[in-house]
Each structure stands twice: as C-alpha cells, then as structure tokens.
Length: 122
Length: 221
Image 1 (cartoon, helix red, strand yellow):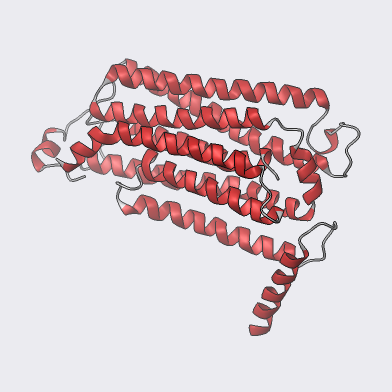
Image 2: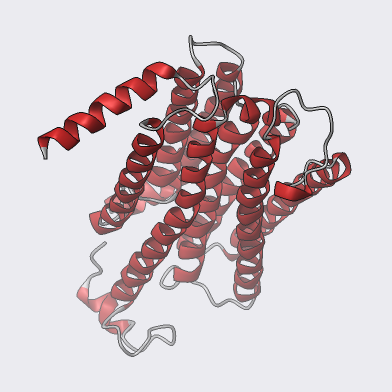
C-alpha cells in the first residue's frame, strides 16, 4: 500500500524536483556573473550547484531514493573511481611547472607540498 | 518491492518473462542493475573528457576564458531548460507506464522526443554559427584576432564533449522512438514496463551530463 501511495504522489514530486532544477539553473547563471575572489572558487561553486542538480535527478527522476541500494552502490562506486582518477591527474598537473602564467600559484604550491609529503612518507 | 506469491505465480507464464528469470520482479531488478552498470561506463567515458578539460583549463586558463566568450550562454541556458523539462516528461512517461495509462505514456514519450529535437535544433544553430566563424577544433581552427593563444584547445573539447553528448541525445531519440512504437502496440503494462524504465535511466544520465557541461563550457567566469 505504501508503494502505491508513493506512486500516486510521484507526479507532484517530479514537478517539485523540476522547479528546483530550474531555480538552480538560474542560480548557476547568476553565480557565474559574480566574482567570488578567484576563478577557482567560481568553478567550485558552479560544480557544487551542478552536483546538487545531478543528485536531485539521480534521487528522484532515477528513483535511487526508493530503489534497492545495489543500484546506488554501483553508481557511487563509479563516481568514486572517477573522483580518484580526477584527483591524481590534477595533483600531477599542479605539481609541475606552470606552462603559462596565470595558473593559481597557491594551488600549485599546495599540490607540491602534498605530493612531496606523500612521497617522503612512502 | 516484494510481490505477493499469488501474483508471482499468475505471471509465471507471462509472455514478457525471459525463461532464465524466476519471476517478473527479478527480471526488472536485473535489467535495472544492468542499466546502472552501463551508465557507470558512460560516466567513465565522459569522465576522461572532463579530466582532459580540467587539465587543459588549469594549464591554459586564459585561453579557456577567452574561448567561452564565443559561446552564447543564453542558448546554453535554453538547452539546459529544454533537457531538464525533457527529463521531467521522461519521468512522467515511466510513471504513466507504471500506472498503466497508455495514452499518457504515449503523450509523454512524444513530448520527450520533441524536446530532444528542440535541443538538437538549438545545437545545430550553435554549431553552424561556430563553423561560420572558423571556431573549429584543433588544426581546423581559423578564427583570427584572438588576444590569447590556444583558444583552439577550448573548441576541441567543446566539440568533442558536446558532440559526444549530442550523439547520446540521438541514441536516446532512437530508443524513445522504439518505446513509442511498442507503447502504441500495447506491449507495456503495470506488470511489464522495464524497457521504459531503463530507457528513462539512460535519458536522465544524458541530462545529468549536460548539467555539468553547461557551467563548464558556457559559464567560465
């Protein structure tokens, strides 16, 4: 019975999710016009909003919230693997000499320190 | 999702049940797991491009910043809205299949198909404008007067990422067309709508990838 009532409420939930997604899209466009200190912060904000939108799609449109957990586990493990891949590639890139001035020196410095600490620990 | 024993037995000889499955619920769950595994491979496929984007943008921030000014952010935003609404209509199509409303299922599938066509139409306008300006990938780039070098790299990624995404939209449209045909022939019922459901999952992933492409390509600040 519970699943039945959830199915009946689905259209209203989907409409609410769609409105949230549209509002977040407006916020993304507006936020892109504001300078939050550095380009890096702007990217982080844009990607955070994008991830909130993607989560809404996954949880409600793709039913992950009400499905058996195995589907969510597959999805999250896939994302985690991509995360590891991205992190290692970015750390490697940042730890090298900048090719072009304008690269955030602070970030590069931070990456060099982290990777040298990892290397000296092993 | 537990089906009462009586229902399972009455459906044991349902025409849609493949012989290697015990009961419809098991078949539906297996189909979903299979689709999610496929979606993960899609994420990794696009993930490689996102990684390349991240590295090139870190190394050449000015080229990327300048490159994005050649894109029309309002067309990008329009396409974002079109895809988000199409995700909604797809979710409603799955819902209609689940509740057995065939007319609504057909209508929502048609709406999704139409929105996908609008998306590709806007993409066509954008692409033809870029072609005209010589904003092409790699060595085909012939746009003159850029204040910074390396803008062709941005357009290489722009065309590969949006192009691959566009191919996924086309594949989605073919799939939705196939669903439409089957829906019109009355193949789906509340007991069997796996194809609608897993095609829906695929369509939402296509939407999800665009959710990331839009700020990364159109809104570099």
